[in-house]
Image (cartoon, rainbow over all chains, first blue to last red):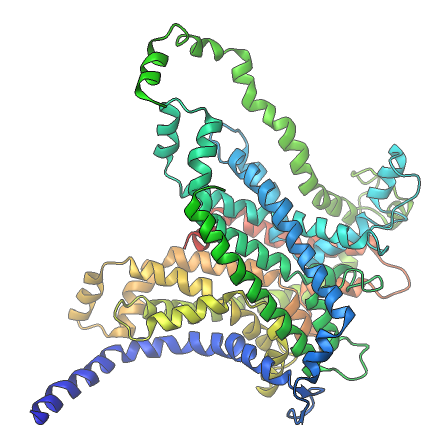
Length: 313
Length: 298
């Protein structure tokens, strides 16, 4: 019995392995690249967070949770944290619904020139954030900026507004530019979502006598809910991790009024004016933020799933 | 809407009103949307128009301000200055090298992994996909320090290859899923036929399946090309110690930090870094947009 078991079982297991050997070999480049530059760094940054380390040599000064307690006790970190969330709240409250309205409009075949509109709105998506940041910095310049010239000429403001240079206006301005930049991609997400809805269903509702508004409200929108959850998460993630725009315009200033967590992390590790980089501390800040983001994401998921079941948007 | 209502509305005297409502107002209504859409979209296009116009203006006209978008005197001097003095020529070459390296790395790793994962009976497949999807959202800024150190250890620091590895690695999930979905949809008979004809695993993939995957290859290549052309964070970190390797996005800042900012040169530099990719995008926008849409749907 034992010998037959060995005789039939072993070769089969070996055969199974041999049958898939090439598949596993094919997985190697992808897993090395993704594992090395995405998964390992994630784990490693948690490890580094327990050290006081300037990046020279291997980390040796184990400090336990000191970095974490310093992060959690730092007012600057919480301010950056709050700013990051403001970016995503604004995106979720303004960009997401506005893009949906436009997507519904631009999804109509009767609208002439809709491709031109889509392209116009998509243009910032394919442009480097650095370029966008710089162009806006020049447009909004208090002395020669076009926006201020226009505003003072018309008489809306009597004194030029230092949009990016004042602690009160810098953050709202950056949030506005971030929405402007991300709008096109959110629009494409919504258009993709609308195209998953079979045309016949919408048409059937219209034939049944529903007005196009009713059909939208009771047929189209409820069907969008499952994919809307994905879109919401994508927009949430994108806006929460805004870095390029802030780094390209204000670098977190003036007086840290536009600091977000990624610029905070960046500053402790890569700021050229830094005496000695604090990799351990920067890793701890990133780890805390990553954990909280994950937590909030997980918090949203069941809520949204419950809503999806309820069928109401 | 009940049946009786339907019958009534179909037979009621009001029914013939409908064609009447297709009068002038009814025809005009769709057009009225343009009154909203044109100004709305101008808000999106204006900065680009301004950028192009400023690039052709003279320094003095720029300094005087003014809202005119048409330069009084057209000049190409700004482009000349940006291209040579500000080294945008070099930056363009760097950006091209970096983007192509990212595209090649991504295609190589994602097509093979996507094919392997499209096998329905591969042990461990579900775990691998779950890990890929869960870690998809990790932003570069949390992992950049270990990535930086790893690339340093590999001796690739201050080089475009190191930056390309750091850019391509985390961006693999969507390409892998796209290839996986495509290969899973190909009839298995095709693969088996190739096997019977004596082709091995690699040959089947290379000669039979990959040529079929051209649309996916195009989408993945284009998406990665556009995103790496416009990447900012990774190239910034990896060229901190090597200014000569800056990409266009990072190089924009060479105009700052002097006593006065060269605004028109900046605008010309912005045009140099934006116009090529916008042209690529305009020609291939259908592929690009469908790729993004496909990624969201899957």
